[in-house]
Length: 117
Image (cartoon, rainbow, N blue to C red; front, top):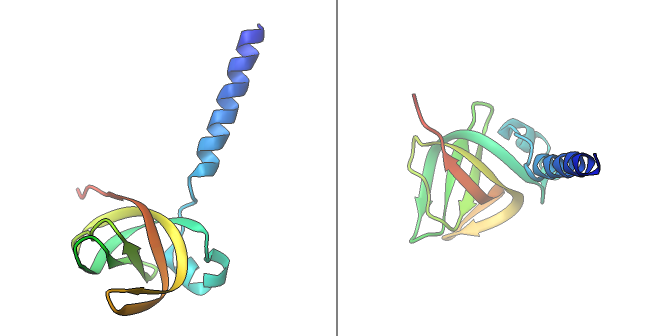
């Protein structure tokens, strides 16, 4: 009986950790409407890459989720135009990449390409 309680408690704690570690899905419109609320916070967005540029790793790409557009800064190479992606990153202001300065951007932490049907 004691082992069952311990197992249930550990399961609940692990699930709580997993749920709180994942940032909530956010729209670009929400970020653009109130950038101060999201500044230095991690967000998750889904969308389509509509612009991109990069130089041997570092670069930036613009994502459109249907509610707006935002630039994403990365050190891992940029996805190609038209790619559907889900990304997680931190909202930042005033970033310069390859001589271009951006207002509000997301610094990419993780990304996954979405399959198109």
